[in-house]
Image (cartoon, rainbow, N blue to C red; front, side):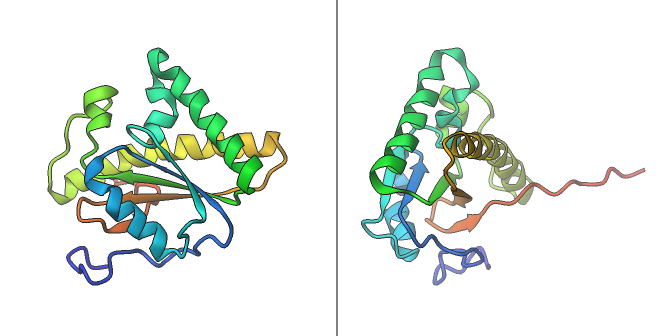
Length: 174
C-alpha cells in the first residue's frame, strides 16, 4: 500500500470479521471519526463494542505499572461482557501513531520522529504491547472455552490503517 495514497486508506490484506467485534482503541480525539470510518470499511457498522483506553493495548495492560493495574481488570470485564452480551468472535486492537499516552502517561517511549526509522521503532513499540495483550486475550479465551480471533492494526494520523506484523530483525553488520 502506498503510504501517500489517500484514495485507499485501508489495508485489505486480512479477512474482515463476520460476526460481532470488540474494538479497543485509544482515546485520542483526533482519530475518532477515522476509527468509525475504519470499522464501517470492514462492514461492521453497529456490530462492534468499542472500548476506549488511553494507549489502547498499553492501557488495557494497565500501562505495565501498578497504579494502572485496575485498567487491566476493566478491559477484562469489557471483554467478558462483550462475549456474554454479543457473542464476539473477533477483537480488533487499533493502535495509532504519535500516541501521547505511550510517553506522557506510561513513559515507555519518547515521542517518535517522522523518519522511516522512527516509524519502524514506533510500530515495534506498539506491536510489543499489542502482542502482549493479544496473548492475554487468547489466554482468557482458552480459560473460558471461547474461540476469539485477534487482529492488530496501526492507524496513522491521516486515518490510514494497516495490519501490524512482527518487526523484522535487522542483521548486524560485521
